[in-house]
Length: 252
Ligand SMILES: NC(=O)c1ccc[n+]([C@@H]2O[C@H](COP(=O)([O-])OP(=O)(O)OC[C@H]3O[C@@H](n4cnc5c(N)ncnc54)[C@H](O)[C@@H]3O)[C@@H](O)[C@H]2O)c1
Image (cartoon, rainbow, N blue to C red):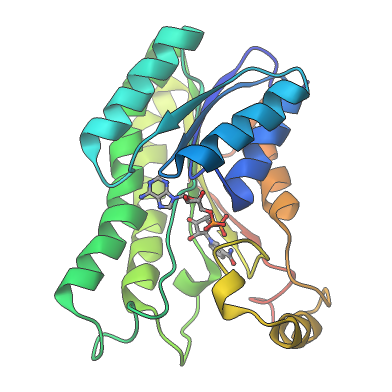
């Protein structure tokens, strides 16, 4: 029960790492606001939490819309009384539309920024005042190894949005440390989730896994475990930090 008594909002919680973290956080005692664009997926996550005896609220919305994020924070506080953990997990990787700067349209650049960068902006904008009221809390941002290294097959808007979160992380850590609000980034390596599914054949998965020091792709639980540590009081003196969880990709 490492999150006993805490309330968490997790965006993109209908699938992949967000769902895994929602289920794990609830198992560890947190009440969870499951925020997702996909109503059915959000409801499935909530059903899984409730099946295990936990408490969760499904909220259907788009992280790129400020009104949706504000309403989700308000609905979560109305239901559970407070907010302790903001987990800005929702993100999109659209390799068909977001490529190198020389190939990407302005429209596609903007929509990727709106989801991957403005989403965390809106969540922290509306969530931080609630953490202040609660006497502190933990913010988890989700970067990527693509913000730490260049790739020949570029997704430049995605990469820039994830890179910007490194700067936002430091700024929030410094601004709100005095309120006992911590902010940290997780940089996942390649994780086998629905986000990667359109781009990964079984052969590709094996080849990428074999190329990593740990000899496998990541799974959603690898990241959810890191997030659980950052959400819990075990990381009480950790802020402004970046946690690379990538099977050793960046090390080689
Ligand atoms: N999977 C990877 O290899 C990988 C690597 C590095 C970073 N990441 C990052 O990790 C995070 C989670 O990725 P994942 O692989 O679990 O993704 P996923 O696609 O498996 O799940 C993402 C969830 O977010 C929801 N979502 C998408 N757009 C949304 C929006 N505008 N508003 C609300 N919800 C929205 C989707 O409906 C889905 O349920 C993302 O920020 C992603 O960029 C993923």
